[in-house]
Image (tube, rainbow, N blue to C red; front, side, top):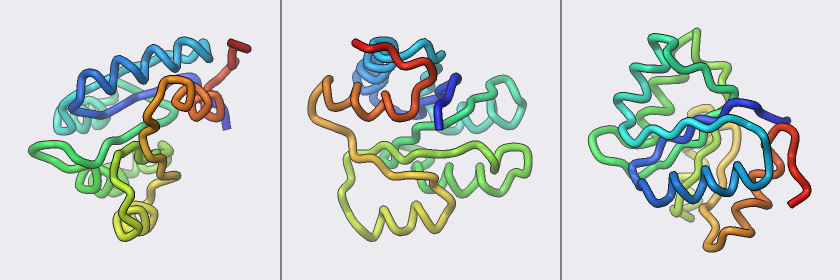
Length: 130
């Protein structure tokens, strides 16, 4: 599935910057990054942002990615948005729990830029050849 509007929810500013650069390198999709999961949840509820897909980190302060995933899936207006967990965690228990809570997919954050571009190419609209 190709998505046009990406939302990344991740408290790590460097990870967001790298994600945005990789997405821009492979596609014409739009990108929004929000570093505060509570803020992201409120903007989603108020329909201030309307992403086609959400890339969600797990390890964040105040509200974890799994907590946010749970809250999003409770909301009828939001529950159809595919959520892809995008985390450094490799624990099988966490991956299983995320899927049970409604995550569309689970991707481990890659260690290099080219791997990230390859991952995003699978999800991005109008992929570029570069």
